[in-house]
Length: 149
Image 1 (cartoon, rainbow, N blue to C red):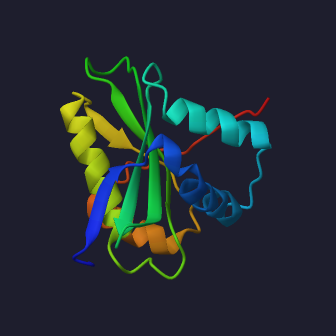
Image 2 (image 1 turned 90 degrees about the vertical axis):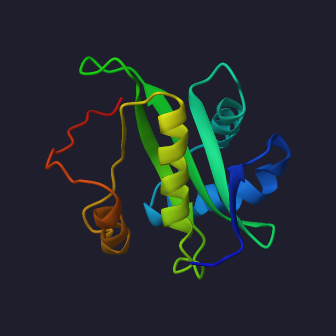
């Protein structure tokens, strides 16, 4: 792990640094979204009324990784769940420990918020990420179903 990693919220004035990482995440999953989704996502991530958050991994002051996470209610616990929705680290910097540092930072934020768990999804073919995730969390065996509208 690089010694000079700083994990902190990505400020509202840092969209130009965030957007290529968000696009990289979408490209990785071969997904596209309209510009209005970029705009609404960025606005939500910086709106204090929204339960959505954004942290960045900085090395020598440069934003090289991002994580989006949000809180939601559960019928199973009193505390909210924290859903780690999107995690992306710039290509060429993936062995620096940024992904681990971002996940652990979300764990810390979730604990402070009183969440009872952090959970996330990844594609079954994302073997590199899964190798990391297997060291940080349990895989409970549930299968996702969804219907798009």
